Image 1: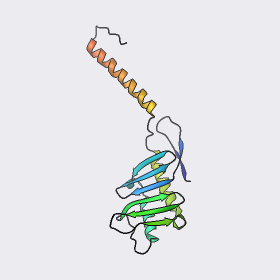
Image 2 (image 1 turned 90 degrees about the vertical axis):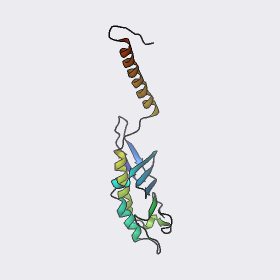
Image 3 (image 1 turned 90 degrees about the horizontal axis):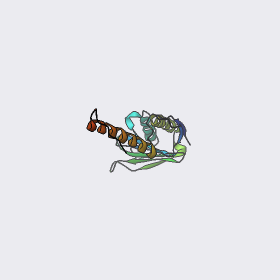
Image 4 (image 1 turned 60 degrees about the vertical axis):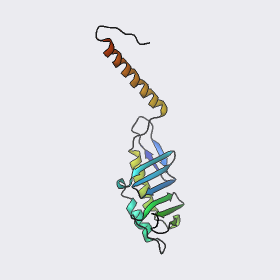
Length: 158
């Protein structure tokens, strides 16, 4: 399986990302799934998509037209196969055996995606979110009490 080190933008430790499925959607996004990660990235940020689609077009079955314009979705199953699904009415879907694929192009896409994913913020855990919200509420309450009580009054919060 392909892996990459993910650098966290918080103080969390780096994690290794292994992927099992990559989806390239014709509506402009790609999705990386694997090792507890499920992230989407805009296709325009990935320069490695078009070379892979061009490669598939070069090895397509007779009667199939593979292109970015005809693309509904491409499903890449790590070390298994690639499925091309065209937009409705464009042509038929096609499965490419892993042995027929230029793996360097798939690796380049995987590396490109994992690099972009590593630059995304790491979401806070529920516990971290709750602690942050509690601190915000305490600060907001203290500010309101100061406004209400004025400079010469003392108010105790219980």
